[in-house]
Image (cartoon, rainbow over all chains, first blue to last red):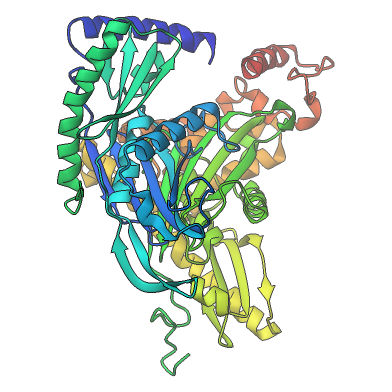
Length: 275
Length: 357
């Protein structure tokens, strides 16, 4: 970033802070308000589940591939899942092609923890032959347009893709796996989403857009299900006061309820199978 | 193949799959496009002309066109490993070279034009589907080009020449000929072939691919026009205020200012140099990819003004037409033994701007 850009950002930061002091934001949202969320599912025929999610102008695409593999020795009766994220060079001039950069790895790992720890996918149901054959779900997310807050977009995209995933039925015959032509939906056990609060001066906002994200001092992401807090990640170079953390968490839980409503509205087939 | 020439997906031998092109779909890119060719889903975005990294690979007399072709892990029936394969690297290379010959790189010395193209769903012919996306995105970015290039494959399926092989046909077919072709300038910019062709089959396949590309270029033109019409509606200009068709008709020699620009640069004499502004505007006019921030009327006016004043503009923009021999490749400064003092001062300024980080 050139000196000029840094000066411009410093001026802009003051402006955004002043706006926040009078409870306003650049695009007129309230501090906790999200941009418009749009979800499309089932666009990729070569994937078992897929989604394109946009939050405002930020847009990501997600695909779920199901493969048959061998289980880890320490969990012979469990399938596995991994979440990958690539800050695709399609999505911003500063994203280069090549091995993933640190920030992309962080987003992938935060989303991975959200999906894994929420136990929304019942890994035991992915076991086909105990100790020998399991299903592996590979959830890969690519950014299409980066206008800030990719983390939350990735969380929603992964959930939307999993919620519409159709796995081919299999039959076990003499220790061999035979893939059938019929499909069954993947059943989700919980409804995880992540919400990231960005710290700008002494203020906290949800769903920062590109400018706000660039000038933010720090961020903290909480992944929640309807009943539990499942993941957390603090990023950025500034500290967050300990008494603020609880306040942010309360706001996050409040905001996540309305985001869940929005997601349910856009994916009518979404069902959560709680035991 | 049956008597009615029906293929597995019901097409006739010389029929394209359904093609849908949209431009301006991604906002952070300078130009972007989305292409559906049958089941193929391709996104492309263009960044540039912009500063080139690493600097040692920059060219003193032209821009580098760098095309990065990638496939998403979930784009194929089996899982694709996330890092670039040899196939992806080869396709990136041949596509980059193909577009070096089409893009007017001489207007942007030392800079890079980066094109990223990502396949999210594949079903045969992804490199040519990618080329459709690349052409549309480059035109959308207002990058001056000699022509709109289209790409498609022809091949042999059940001993018959067919156009636009699907994934299934590609697997079972005995020949594949992907081609990138620019109809107006009649140039082939990418050519690959694998399989078994007789001479007659090759000739037929080549002509079939060319005729397919002519259809494809029309679809790209329509997509670019559609964005232009949408902007016109948004800013509320009635259709009487301009003559879109006159601008868009590609065959019209009077409007192909692009060709004039090419010639004047090829001669490399300062008298015929053309400003970059004029080049950009005339090209976006030709392709119809008008930037949204330009009010249309003013853009059209300024285009006329710029082209009329080409001769007068030459001094201030003289560095664009400096023959490459006068430029030290690494230093970014003009050579000391330059006779024209006023010019060299101007060049100093321009180059110092360019070499700033």
